[in-house]
Length: 165
Image 1: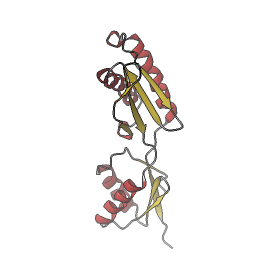
Image 2: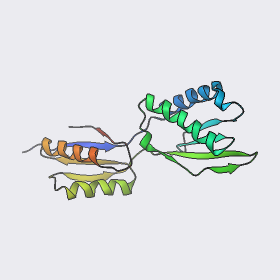
Image 3: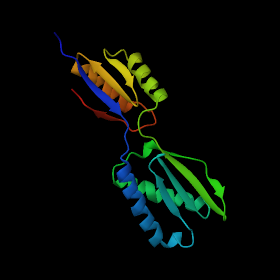
Image 4: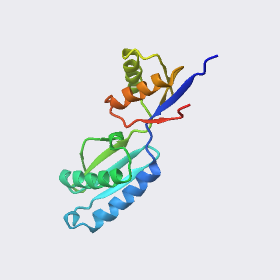
């Protein structure tokens, strides 16, 4: 009886590392001269998976976000999984921007991935399981082709491949 091989496609962001990066970015913002009197701050809401960036104006909000993105990139956190919101004017003549952290694969993106795999006519079975995608086949070569296809696709998420068995 032939053995079935499989792997899981996930998109994960480690919130502990994000929290550490937020703290380091806050220290850098506090010490930089160009942020003097900017009242810039970063707040991580781990439950809602959001970061709130605040500063005096829209330019300083973007600059503070760039500092955070630099820290995240140095730690290997996928920047693709962060979605910038619209800059809002807050009370006290400050600006605020929510940044959403996408952890897990949304259903619509998972359906796009399944459709791409089917369109490539690979001999694999792809199934959506919650916020991840399971791809299985009798051939390891077909699974390698599926990984290459998914890595090459632009789905707007940083994908990780786990549990290759």
